Image 1 (cartoon, rainbow, N blue to C red):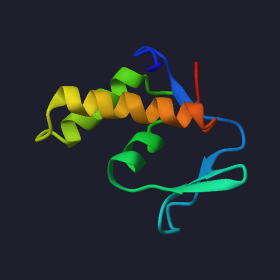
Image 2: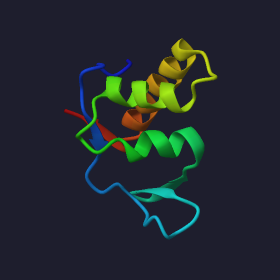
Image 3: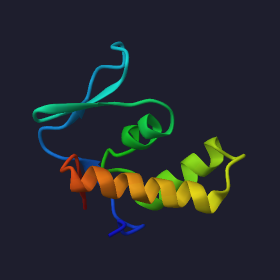
Length: 92
């Protein structure tokens, strides 16, 4: 189920991004890690509990302005739902 556009995604307890000085950027989760780059990194960096899902979508639609806006939105919603299923993300 896609997240509500007005919810505030944040990393789940025990999950964090590695330091910016460490490459590649990695989402560290209990017993696993996920390398991030491009849009996936842009999304996760905004999952700080301060940006709504809609704000994240709007920001990335501006960054990736050559892409079809509806495609950007559906990709972001799908990625957020996947991270939530993997218990890496909570919504408030």
